[in-house]
Image (cartoon, rainbow, N blue to C red; front, side, top):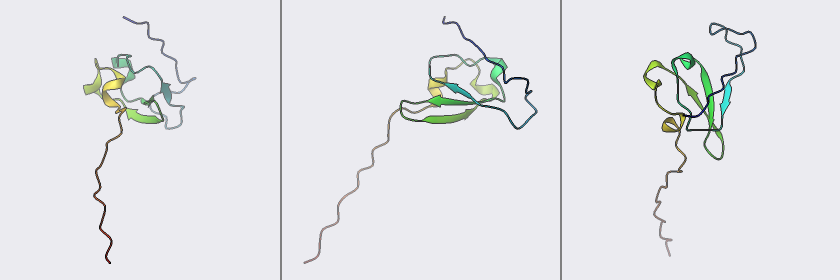
Length: 82
């Protein structure tokens, strides 16, 4: 199991609204119970996706809640009128 380093919010507790969110680049990290009610920004390879942690997410990995693939939509071209 990989070592997880948890950085505090520089003196802010969970009840305050002003804090710096955590940025996560490694999607294989486990979500532990200390992360409940915190906001994380997880990097999906192009941009950061905001995730707020709830109790049902504990024990899962960050990568399970971030999609790294772009959905492709097929759009049929309209025929030009003559």
